Amino acid sequence: MANEAHFLSTSLPFLSFNKAVLPEFRQSKGLSFLVNSRISRSKQTRASMEMRGSGGPMTSDHSAVKIPHVLTVAGSDSGAGAGIQADLKACAARGVYCSTVITAVTAQNTVGVQGVNIVPEDFVAEQMKSVLSDMDVDVVKTGMLPSIGIVKILHQQLQVYPVRALVVDPVMVSTSGDVLAGPSILAVFREELLPMADIVTPNLKEASALLDGVKINTVSDMHSAAKLLHDMGPRNVLVKGGHLPDSLDAVDVFFDGEHLYELRSSRIKTRNTHGTGCTLASCIAAELAKGSSMLKAVKASKFFVETALDYSKDISIGKGPQGPFDHLMNLKHNSGRQVRFNPSDLFLYAVTDSRMNRKWGHSISDAVKDAVQGGATIVQLREKDIETGDFLEAAKSCLQICRANGIPLLINDRIDVALASDADGVHIGQSDMPAHVARSLLGPEKIIGVSCKTPEQAEQAWLGGADYIGSGGVYPTNTKENNRTIGLDGLKTVCLASKLPVVAIGGINISNAHAVMEIGVPNLKGVAVVSALFDRECVLTETRKLHAVLTEATAAAAAAAK
Ligand SMILES: Nc1ncnc2c1ncn2[C@@H]1O[C@H](COP(=O)(O)OP(=O)(O)OP(=O)(O)O)[C@@H](O)[C@H]1O
Ligand SMILES: Cc1ncc(CO)c(N)n1
Ligand SMILES: [Mg+2]
Figure (tube, rainbow, N blue to C red):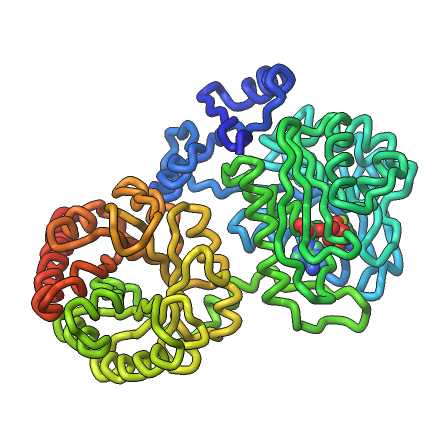
């Protein structure tokens, strides 16, 4: 984690800082960092950038909106699973603009590489100059660099037009085993490319080639390889374990010169892994362009690849052994989906608790009926100590009540109970099934909510296809043990970063609900409560009171906004 703290911001003129200070700072501290961008952003984006500690000096031109920009210098894959085409799709999926310098055109499909046509060196130089002299490129990502001359051109152009970070995917061999850059390239990779790189992302074969053929068969070999590669000059190394034999997880090893991290995700069983490496590197570049620190960028990118592979595991494109996957699944998932969920349903979110109901002698369905009559706008059944059969019966009877009143009923954690009862969806926590897995089990129409304490968790929930997030504990609570309180500030941070609507949760009641809604962030849609409604004798009265407080708070916020 140490790396994440090593983040420097500056208000020095961008170019002079980058040229004059960057190399010294790197050498003296051995740290990886990003220089703040000189980008003018919309208010909201700027606020969320600042929350991540990366807000930069603003230009005086407030009308210009600059979007983060990655330039990829790579080869074209006619099958569009890897290379330039993967880079464009990965950047699009991450909301980043991507320009392209094409180094080679390959005739390629899911069977293999049938032909390679290298673009003349001076024309690669011309493309680079066209882009870099005109556009504000934040990060350059390289893929297939098929000749020594092309590497040298890249080196020269980056001296003339420095950028914030260079991501090097040292492409040498395609997944199908075809050579995309021969052994003659190794010397210039070692001597010129790696020392310029902020991160280098070899797969096992590439790491081995760069290290004179050393064997890399285990995670421990990957550790040693990462350290040895770091000695060649890149600021960070990610040795990718996609091709690690006999491995149940997909393990990558990240080394920042100080700490080694084993980054693990589940290994998706699919033939559609063509282009995972290009996608990972482009996604890292995109995250860096948005202002992320290196380790966060790598983690977010690995999660993106895992999620995309999972969504695409059954798609069938081409007849060969290695198919492409779908980078834009989130777009499709969210836009092609019949959205049943209305974010204003989060206004007064009632969460049941069997212990409290027992204490006051209420049945689950009576408690839910009273909450609904009192003005609850959504109900979640959170029954931790109940038999599955009883849970299913309770869900069915509560569903009748909710349907009769036109409000959604969600089930906490138990996707099986949600499916069996045909409830409207689920609410899941960080230790439950990931959102994207829940989405593939529940299909496009059910509602999925995820508990999130941090902007990263909010991003993952969105990526996984969730509809809303619950964020807290806003205040200390007895309902959940060992639950960290994030306070109103933590809530605001998550709301600003979240692309999904948010409901606040944790210790909220009629005396503090007003203060919660007053934080005044548009995507905070309401409050979720347990004890304030259910640890009371009269659920109906308490719900009515809370409804009145929320109505007043919302009216006050609307008046203040005028
Ligand atoms: N089946 C899988 N399930 C989950 N993650 C995977 C799987 N296969 C690869 N990955 C991940 O994808 C990323 C790319 O790794 P890989 O070693 O496959 O790169 P690569 O060989 O350069 O890919 P390519 O050349 O096909 O673009 C890594 O983060 C790796 O862990
Ligand atoms: C053009 C191109 N670049 C990179 C790769 C890496 O897989 C590929 N197969 N094709
Ligand atoms: Mg690769």
